Each structure stands twice: as structure tokens, then as C-alpha cells.
Image (cartoon, rainbow, N blue to C red; front, side, top):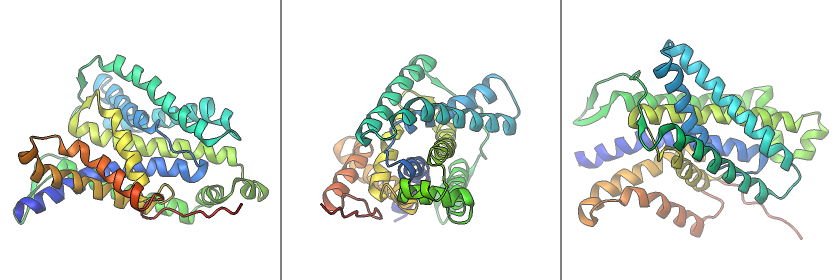
Length: 294
């Protein structure tokens, strides 16, 4: 029983990071109806920016992380202005393919930077292990999990109680109707890309602080998209629940099946989860089922 609870606790810690990336994808989809693959690279470059400012340049951590947020937000702004805005009014599938092209372009840049190796961000998370009833919880991962929950709460407040959030919600429902009320949809697109990029930056920094910056880090974007699809591309709570479920599924399945199958179960779990949700509920657990009349 202790092993099972240990696997669940580790899964929840990692699931919080999946949820952060997933919610950045959900934010873009809610406002633009485009499922972004580019956020996997935004996540990776968020970690690289912190490495540059904090590890290479030696700036104080607070200043370094603020600069990393600004740089990542600017990266999202450039992507939106250069690739997304020219496609307004075009088929959504074209915009989706452009996000894939952006992913591949920045993947080439990312691989040139790390040159097949890895980069390590100087430690900044609390060290040690918290033991609760025989369950060992690393303090660093616990800190990132708490940060993820706090960020989800902040996003919920942003969407529900602020003027910007009201504009985001209106744009997510109907672009033309939002424009008729005086809301600048293009401005909303820009804001949401900047905010979602900063959220992805948090996920990238948290992940890299535990596993370092290595060549497969951008591929976490695929898991983020799977979680977003599982929870529903229009549901912020769905991203949180989907991320936690995926983390638990990966660790529990790997913990019990790896000794039998020889390993690799953790990497397959996400795709099994995606297959099941697409077969059973294509719109996701909390996604909106839109009925179109012909």
C-alpha cells in the first residue's frame, strides 16, 4: 500500500507540470480556436532563458526569473504577430499546421543550443525530503506542485473577476459578437499568447529544475496537448484534472508494469490515455459539445 501511495504522490507532483502546459494550450484554444503545438518549444525556451540569465550571466534569481518571463512573453508575442495574425479568417487547420511549423523551427534552434547534451540551471528549489506516513515527497517537486496550484487559482481569478478575463471569455464564445461590443479581438489574441507563454515558462522552469534542460524537453508539449484534449480544450479545470490523472497513470503503470514488461510503460501511458478519451468522449471530459445545424 505504501508503494501505491508513493507512486500516486510522485504522479501528482509531475501531473501538476503537465497541467500547467495543458492550461497554456487551453488558454490559446479558448480565445482563438487553435490547438497550439508551439507551446512545447515555448516551455523549453522559458527554461533556457532562465539558464542564460541565472546560470550564465549570474543575475540574482528574482531578476533572472522576471527577465525569463518577459523574454518568454515576448517570444509568444512574436509568434502571434508573425505567424498567427496573418492567418485570421483562414481555415483553422492551417493555423494548427503553422504551430507545428513553429515547433519544428524552434526545435532546430533548441538542438543547436544544447548540441546534443544538457544544460543545468543552478539549484534554487528547496532541498530535502518530506516524509508523511512513510511516503517520501521531495521538497523541490512539492514546491513546483504548490506553485502550479497557485497559478491555476490566479488564472481562475483573472478569467472570472477582471476586465481582461471578461474580454477573453467573450472572445472565446464568439469573435464577431465580442467585436460588436467594442472588444478588440486582435488585442485579446496578443494578450492570451503572452499570458499562455508565461504559464508555459513556469512549467518549463519547474521541469528543467528537476530534470535539467535536455533534447527531449520540447516534446513535453505533446503531453500537454494530450492532457488538454483529455480534459477538454475549452476547460481550465479539465487541464488540471487531466494533468494530475496523467501523472498518476504514468507512475502507477510504470511502477507495476515496468518490472513485467521491461520498461517504457510510462512513455506509452499518455497515448493510451489519448486513445481512450478520443474513442469514448472526443470532446474531452469537460469539453463543450457543439451542435451545428445545417
